[in-house]
Length: 228
Image (tube, rainbow, N blue to C red; front, side, top):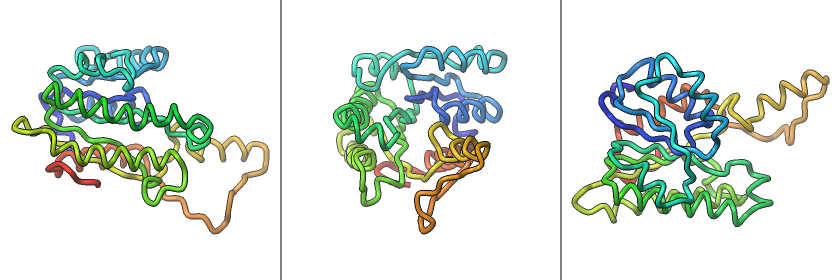
């Protein structure tokens, strides 16, 4: 599916996260994009990423410092972009519960800004990363993602003749990603005690490469308005 990226300019919000790093790795290995733009607010992670992709990414990968809360910066970053993958979010459930206004500003307000900037700049495809927690949400993180999904789906009605297309993808916990349970269990195993919240609980897990392939396949299939 990575051939979909050939000769395209792709921007990833929150691109220094686990998904963004794996996406860039797979895109550079299997396709020939014109530009891969990493849009995030963490300069240290951008520095680390720049060091990691020095050889193969020098002529392709670009690094923009910016926040999805900043509409003007998004407008500048989206100019000439074909595909936006919106991965930026506050994702930790306890952090969102303790900082609800910040979660709303980033996950909902940020979604609005991404939509407006994509429409203003004529981006062709926008795909937003959501979560299984948006299904009948029981916490604020899931609730903000459910609202964001509805915003992205309805954004297709605003695109008019330029036909910017918006869709969403949902998936479960990603094995080994930042904040996932696997690194926690590894550390606990060193101390001889692994904690389980409930033995009756189910966790739905995928790998990072599977997450990237899922997003790519959704980009290939989307017409606008879908939640994959």
